[in-house]
Image 1 (cartoon, rainbow, N blue to C red):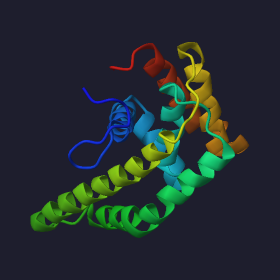
Image 2 (image 1 turned 180 degrees about the horizontal axis):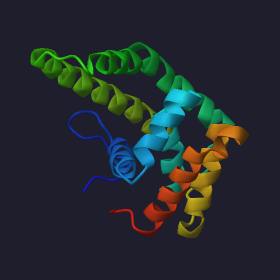
Image 3 (image 1 turned 90 degrees about the horizontal axis):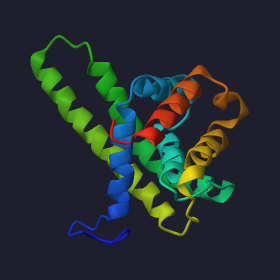
Length: 178
């Protein structure tokens, strides 16, 4: 087993994979995907930054400060605007195309979009390696909520979608496997 932050053969760290694994598990919780997509599409928020804020807190990596949030926005911004968003837009445009060959192409676009999302998360995970204070297990849920509130702001944190995410976070804190 590798130590946290060690490199594997592909140049990725175990931090990168820990964030990605959290995101996959959390995204599958009831209501979370719809809430995240609504925050993205209607509120202009970045799903990866929401997940990053939650992961920092719930994993014990600490509070998200303004400087770290700004660095995270910079790390995600270019990849999001130049790679992930154009692929997402193309995938959505092809969603209802009747041609089966085009639907196979759409699946390829979807795979590229997911690879772009993972690349964004790898960059974000590296920010966590730079030394956040560890949070005790009892305070992790509160830290994750504070991180979410910092990113979403006063209006966003009061949204129905934020409530769904916070409920899922409570369930995750009780049992991260389901």
